[in-house]
Image (tube, rainbow, N blue to C red):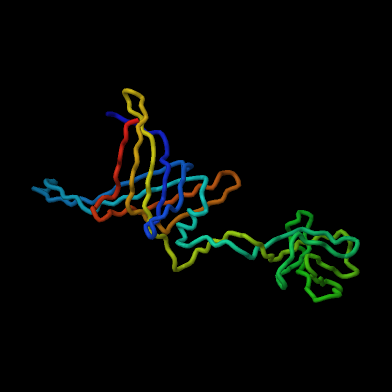
Length: 251
């Protein structure tokens, strides 16, 4: 039978460490399985006569513009932690009639920096103000809760950028550590293949027995194009020397 495929497989990625499903994707755009091997030749009068093949290798490259955060955890070799986290914020504030400004969150003590900005709200003007505990004067300010107090002679309407760290609850944090690397997984790929003569769609399942993400990857954030996450897995043979199994089921 002659078949054609026009789809990207849905992947189920299972941890080899504990046998539990790690993640499932049905939104990837491209899955490329590349195979290579080495060949050495014996020559007869300078012409290749016999060849021996060895060192068969394979990779699976997944490209997706949507992704589960677990993809990043898989690449980092780290778990996603949920809990309280420190977040840096930047707010533009104006000095009001009471010589104060209110921030949207409560800063961590000692984390606040206040500096005047230009009309574009980006350019820093002069040096940052000095923080004091209370009763600011001149180029000083104080912070109580989420309120920033300026000197009594501060000019109403003056615009400042306020940089500060605040604590947020239920944040998700992923750490890329220098001493942690991707683990081993098993990948099951499901797709449909169409039989040429009948137009019937048959089901094909591909089992990649041992797949380890490569440590090299790039995340590009663009103002004009969606981020494309490209992950390449090195594929290894199992105990039976099988790297991948294709199972086709008639529709």
